Amino acid sequence: MSKPVYILFYGNYAAESLYIPMVQISAVIALFMGLTSVLAMILQGLSKTGIALRAIGWGMAVKILCQPIMIYLTSSLGALLSTFISLVIVTIIMGSYINHRFELLDFLNTKVLNAIYVSSFMLLILFTGLSLVSNHFVPDTRVSSGLFLALVGSLGGLLVLVIYQKCQVLDILKNR
Image 1: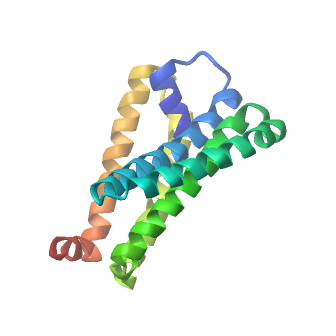
Image 2 (image 1 turned 120 degrees about the vertical axis):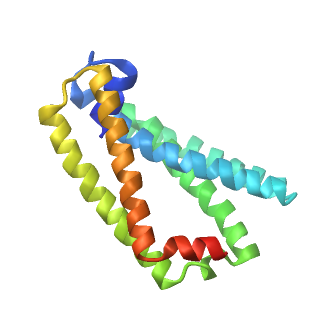
């Protein structure tokens, strides 16, 4: 999926070996960055801004320590990898406080967890299959990449909704 995303935003100007690893790592970083932002807003709403700031401080310290090592080991990907490591630590610190305070993991019963596992596995299969299709049949233009990504996003969202409906996770979420 990284090739169509890159072509959509930047065009088809670079060799795939240069940009695909960066886009893949950046996608995972974006997930953790979004999660960190949401957790920070939750803590701010709880008047626990100090915990969020300490977590961000720890994350910054880890990034400063890891970045030279990661750049030495992986060259241009090092900065991205150190950012990923620091965001994981920040997310763990903030998430563990929120979980401890509200006991959120008690909400995740086996039915919900199984639905999450099944939908994640099915999305992985869907995205892998569609990535193979895109490599062979989708032209390397911005318009075709955008249309392909819209199709893939729609199919992925529909797949998750169907699985959650079959596993009755939507009913559980409505009742909470």
